[in-house]
Image (tube, rainbow, N blue to C red; front, side):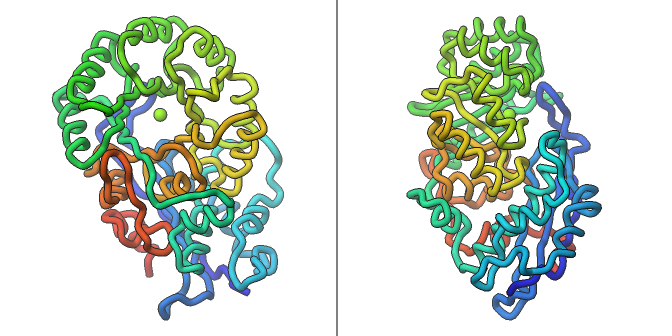
Length: 387
Ligand SMILES: [Mg+2]
């Protein structure tokens, strides 16, 4: 029976001089996590690694006070998979002991980190890439090749439009075909200039989406939808507050433009309410629940079950968060589209910068696990966690 012997976490500074319509990233942080076991691999203890999604800050307090102590205190029989390994579903129940239903707060991001590290560990234990582990467990036909979109276009204080165009040109040069930029952090006319500048750069078959980060009022949303009517956009993301389902319903009834939302809903309960009450259209809209921030793969599979029950194909999923863990989720769970950071010099961008990419399709590496060890940002993320 494999025993978890240590769990270490650290907070990583993600400070960047960028902003969207909702927040600035000057003080942004994220957590990195390492779960060590008494299993051995290549003469060293078998470890699982996880790195946070972006946008909700690190989860160190919750990890240290509640979730890591529960995992370390549990007898290994409580998370044993019956085959000499660890079952992340059973471990999930251990860390969620004595947690009440509903009111998810930030705990879903902390639990998501533990879940991600355990899946990394399970895939390494089976000596296969994580997407293959997930595909086998889920019974879906999957492949290492995934459709990607490059996400960026945050606002800068100086040379905003030229810098945005440089980012997009560089991403095209790398093999990207799909792009998403921010809206709502500037007056409408300035946003239209940014959108048109990018549309001018795109070649045949390339697409652009826009992201309002949930900050528009009803009236401002209508102004934007009117102005965007003539533009061939892939989707408009979070134009309004992520929890205002009535307003989503109203917008979906008024405009044929595809909507994307869900990155700020963190559970099966929240996904169910969005699908029940948000008026979203299963033939065009995209669901962006963030796997890592939504309690991880264990809960994400419950979200997929809920989608199926409400008539949604999992190909409508484009999980928020551009890094390797989500990319494996897209590949292994048969989802539609993965997000990566357009700026491949940022920490998040460097995580996925090494993926082979051609015509907007990336190929995940064959390395066992999530593949953090081979990514260019490995040492910066995990630092002293790697003894
Ligand atoms: Mg977004």
